[in-house]
Image (cartoon, rainbow, N blue to C red; front, side, top):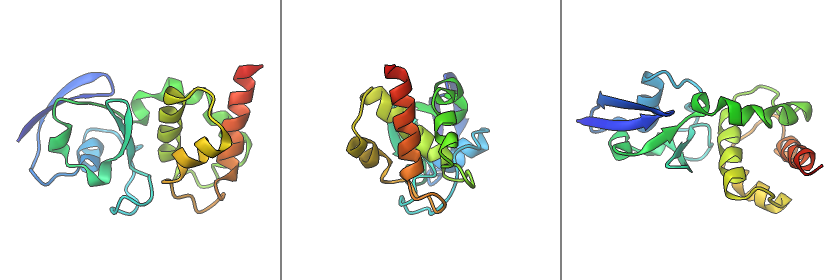
Length: 151
């Protein structure tokens, strides 16, 4: 099947098999920030933005992306750079494996709600698996970023 997607701001036409998951399609097209973790929609490592909303690319067929706009971390580096240092300052990026999923969900959160409460931040990040830091570092980093913007 042929699909047309806007990937990280660029139109892309590609041929895919009917059973190709979006995660595999994205990695085949150079988006290596999209990671395979569980293949069961439980870890958040494969989070991308489709039409501005976070989705899990391991459970979405590539053909369903036809006609949509997809952003991965590769296409959102500038937006991510605004706050990832704050997360790193809290020691929340110990192994780094979960970072792309956390960053993608944080971007989606901040686009939707520019001043979230701690509970709203936790709710948005709840689907991301982090084995190193226990989520509190990410929360502190996002809170520090928000506080710096409000000063």
